[in-house]
Length: 517
Ligand code: UD1
Ligand code: UDP
Image (cartoon, rainbow, N blue to C red; front, top):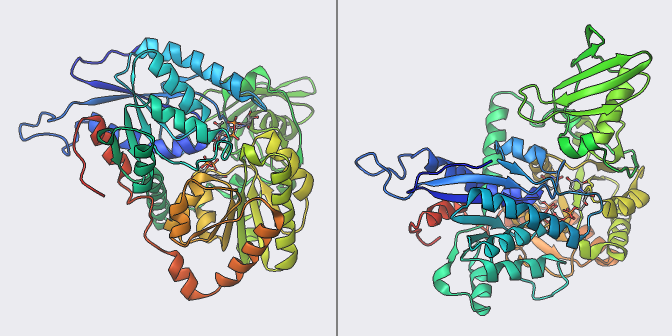
C-alpha cells in the first residue's frame, strides 16, 4: 500500500504494538485527525490552513493481538498496516527482528517525514531503529521516564534510553522526565513537556461512559464482556487465528447457517460461550459436524476468522472462541451482580518480565493472604495473555474463593472497575498514571518505579514483589480507604497531565508553539 501526499503536507507514520501504546497514542491520532480535517482551530482568516497539514498513517506491529483489538475499536482507530508479528511466548530478539524487518517495508512504501512512537516497548524501539536506518525523523511520546536500573523494568529501561538517543523530538510527560533527558545530554530545544496522553485517553473514555449512562445504556459492553477463565491451555495458534487477529462478541441470538437453513442460536446460561467483540458468525454443518466458518463483526470492519468445531453449534462456537480469543477455555462470564456484591473490590494486574518466576509467585501468595484476612474483599484479576504469567497465576489462584480470574478487559470495562475498586495492586505503568485521576490507592508491585510523581502525590505505594510487604501495605490501605478524609486526599490533581497532551503533540508536529502547562 502506498499513499500519495501533496507536497505541502507532512506525513506522520504512527507505530503501535501493544495495549498501552494504543491507549496512549489514541489522543494524538485524534488531535492529528482534527488537523487533517482542516479544523477551524488551525485555519487562518482566509479559511486556508495557517500551518502545515499533517497526514497520519497508522501501522500496527501486531506485537499484541487480542489485547489490542478491542482498544482499536473503542478509539475508532483503523490501521493502514498490520505486521502481525506476535507469536506465543515470544522471545525479545526474534520479536525485535520481525518488527525491524516489517517496518523497513512500510517505511519504504510510505516515506514519512516523521515516525511517532510511544513509550518503551520492543515495537517502539524496533520501529525507531528502522526509521533511523532510513533517516526518517523520530518523535517520542512519553520520553524521559527512568528508573536508572538496567534490569528494572526489563527490557523497558534500556528500550526507552535507546529511543531517546534515536529520537529528534521528545514529548516529556512531566518536568521530571525533562530533567532526566537533559541529564543524558539531550538538547533542551528538542524537549517539550506535554503531559501524559493517558490522562487524555482516560477523559475520553469517562466522557463516553457518562454519555452512554445518560442514554440509559449499560456501562459494560454487556456482562458477557467479563469472561471467566476456567483452565490454562497452551495451544499453537492455527493459521486462521494468526491471520484473523479477531476477537468475538456475545452471540446470543446470532444467526447460524446450518447448511441452507438459518436459525437463531439460543444458549443455556451455563453454556454461553462468551465471544466478546463480534456480532456475526456463520456455522455450517457437514453430516454430524458443525464448522464455524466465520466469526466477524457485523459491519465487516474486521477480517473474519474460522475454526472447526464438533458435534453441536455450541461446542463449535466455543471451540472457535478458544482458538480465536485466547489459549484458555472459557466457561462463563462474571455476572455484574457478583461484582456489585463485592464490598471491597481489589483489582489486580501483573505482567512484567522482571517479575517472572519468584516475583509472580510472591504476588499470588500476597493475594491469597489478603483475601484470607479480609472477608469482605473480592479480587478481580484480568490475567495478561502472556503464558509466562498465566502458568503461575492460574496454578495458584484458579478456583480460589473470592478471586475472579478473568480475560483481559476492554478499556471501558477496566476503567469502570478501577473507579469502583477500593484498592489496585499492579505492576502496570499506565495504571499508576490513571489512579490519581480516579482517586484509587495503588500498591505498585515492583522494585522500582519511573513514575515517582504518583508516590509524591500520595496515591501510589511502592511495595516490591515480596508477599509480606505487598500484604502489609494492602491491608493498611484497605483500612484507610474507609475513611472519607483519606479518600478526599486521594483525589488530587493528576501530576501526569491535564488531558491536553495529545493536542500539544499534534501542534508540535506542525512546528507550532505550545504554552507552558
Ligand atoms: C509488552 C511490553 C511491555 C508492556 C506490555 C503491555 C515489551 C518487551 N514488553 O509486554 O513493555 O508493558 O506489553 O501489556 O515490549 N499475548 C497474546 N495475545 C496478546 C498479547 C500477548 O497471546 O494480545 C501473549 C503471547 O504469547 C506473547 C506474550 O503474551 O508472546 C508476550 O507478549 P509481549 O508483547 O512480548 O510481552 P508483554 O508482557 O505483553
Ligand atoms: N488495561 C485495560 N484492561 C485490562 C488491564 C489494563 O484496559 O484488563 C489498561 C489500563 O487501564 C492501562 C493500560 O491498560 O491504561 C496498561 O496496560 P499494561 O499494564 O498492559 O501496560 P503498561 O502500562 O504496564 O505498559
